[in-house]
Amino acid sequence: MNDQLQTIEDPRMKGVSRRNFIKGVIAGGVAASSATYLFRASSLLGQQPHGLVDRLITLNVNGQQRRVEVAKQETLAWTLRYKLGLTGTKLGCDRAECGACTVLLDEVPHYSCSVLTHTVRSRQILTIEGLAKPNGTLHPVQQGVIDEQGFQCAFCMSGFIMSAVGFLKTNPNPTRLEMAHGLSGNLCRCQDYDKILTAMMRGAENMRKAQHA
Ligand code: FES
Ligand code: FES
Image (cartoon, rainbow, N blue to C red; front, top):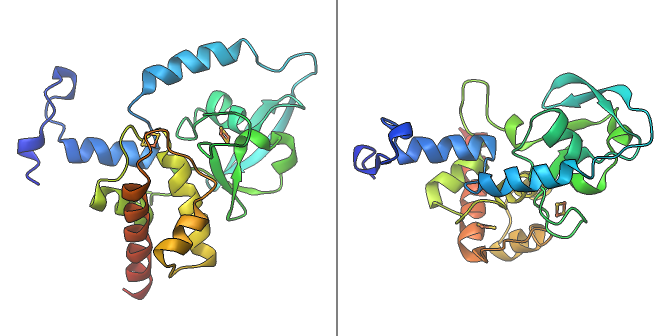
């Protein structure tokens, strides 16, 4: 579609095309419903773990060594979002049901809301922010979302993308049914599953093309 025709009307976004805006959203995993997050973050801050002294530890996040103070009972989702500013990782249920918080630990998808941060000191943590190349080229699965215009509100998007990236490492050429099974730990409150699956299948195709290019 023509970028000029898609220019967003909001004066703050003057000159920013819809396509480029969406690309930025996908690269950073920022959901359109950021106001919801502000609300959730402020209410969660009241529940921040306390009582035990924070320990300074080093995490390997997106290929970088990050020093951070964490409490013994602090979850990885909490650390990523509220200590390291990596808000592309979402918190939906916060109890291992929705998959919105999915990140890769040593290339395997995990619910970061159910992992204690201090237990992953020696692991490679990959979040949605670490998928694109430094030059801004999106990961093939992220590009699949652009290609197919997948997702509605995109709250669940980064979790789905991270699960798909992990799943494709074990099955790079899945059938649609296999992909659906691979993503069955992720829920979409907009119930946009068919479009999401199409986007993830396009991502798989993009990955195979990139590997054979
Ligand atoms: S927020 Fe972790 S599974 Fe829902
Ligand atoms: S697109 Fe809205 S939660 Fe999945």
